[in-house]
Length: 129
Image (tube, rainbow, N blue to C red; front, side, top):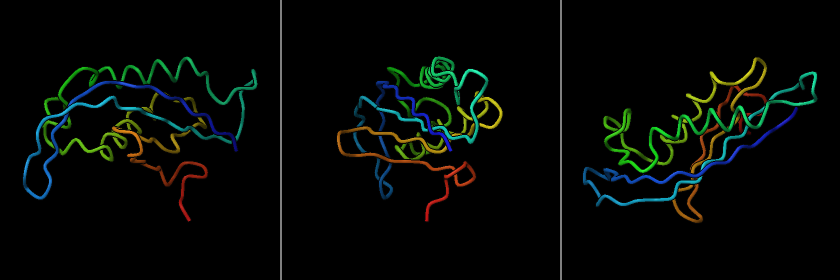
């Protein structure tokens, strides 16, 4: 099993609804870590091309960079929590990956020490004990 992690940062604001009350709009420097998994390497000895995955991740995150997440689909309809942002990234990154490579997890940190992780239970090594 091979794991590769790609990281990227973007800036965005959001206002969560907590127990029916919308909090004040505020911004974060969101740090994203996408971990990819696969059991075999290509002819060049790579699980994936780092640069290709970086481009795909940046394309997904560019939809949100310097924006209010509450105004960006799908977060104009669902709470823009770090958990749901991580899930969105994982789901949209998966189609950009080569055959045999899966998104194992995506972690999103909106503040130091505050990390939410979405784990794909079907990715190699993705199921939690």
